[in-house]
Image (cartoon, rainbow, N blue to C red; front, side, top):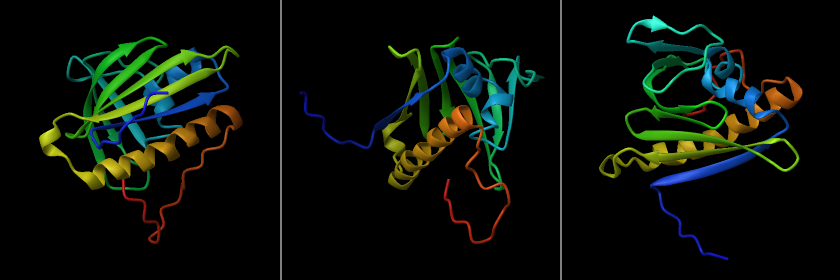
Length: 166
């Protein structure tokens, strides 16, 4: 067994989803899919101003505008890689790159592996790193819940006492 050392340059999470790779890829690469488990609103743009349809897969070079659910917070970014049913990567704020890789298991389920890493190690922000690491666990669990049980675990009603810092 190889010993791994902890560092705050990147983290990796993985989860098994009882679903076909094609279905999972639609949940991560389309605006209609990603709003079911992660973002409140999503738009993907190609050629700078043309909006992709809700079920149309985002492609490498597309830009996006995401609005969080129940927060006055938006995120702009760029799709850096897109390979149907295999890989979807994007910038995640000015700090991070996120890469989502899909592979088929022996049981014909889908293994989703998410890796987030700093774009520039000079801009490290320990709170952002720890917050993202924790929040991705929730959102990946939510994706599993949505896909396998049709239940979205996110709070739909804004509440003043909610203190999720993402």
